[in-house]
Length: 410
Image (cartoon, rainbow, N blue to C red):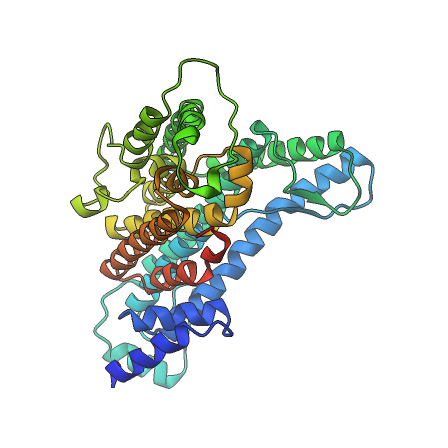
């Protein structure tokens, strides 16, 4: 019956009237994934836990803002999508522990069922896993997740402040531009202090993994001016109508638009690693934009996985690959597609704007963006299956279903 059921699931995944999470589950099952209701419930539990972690971090920010602005209370929010990989990692650890646990043992809550049936099932079970160790692993994973959430928020806020982007820092009272900048500075300072305090509870190697990821990310950002110059020069040779009106500020000098276009293809789309990470296989190393997007978002989540590992939580290379590839796919399919019009106006180079600079027409660029995204998400789905991570597989399909490619010119 699995064949007919998967065909039905495939049709349901294409029904736009259904909620995106439901279509993601159907799409995951249609592609050959397992349909695990317990895993889905675990994911919902983790989402609630991560939300509480964010709320706890923001509570300290709100207290500091109330003191700064002389208010009795303040409601603070900051729009970010960075926490999804943390959710996937924590849910993966929870599911793995739950699968290994003897009957009647919940390694996430630490509860042990004491009814006669559960006791009988435990005596008959073949599991040799130590419940105490499983509970300890989920607890360690939860502690690392809280550290990672606060560290990611701190880093994202710091980048926003460095870029002069304050619009995502929201409070429940009117702000002047100067006050909004002050809100951002206070929020980031509070979270930075929280990160340093939490690091004290972990081995130094956890901090070192985080610092190494930040250094690699900043090294990639140092190349932004160079890519901006290439984009400025390539605009004159672009053939797609969607980028006809792009203007990019860049230093004056001798410009060869066609050569810049070729350099954009070689250095941004098909760049090679200076030191190839062990994470990817030969097929994945051929993915367009892998080097630049790994530097843009992938290294941060490699660092996240290393923090879990250094804290004693084992994670397989296949699982890490699934997370990294899915996040690169999400960055392109959700953020870069959604922001295309603004990126064109502001001269922001992304894989999507790059395709419109390199392609022969809007239609060719559109098809290339879709194809590139599908390649990343398919590779992420395969890695999720190889690492026995159905929750990550569902997340991949959620990304696929949640995209809005109709926003792109074609």
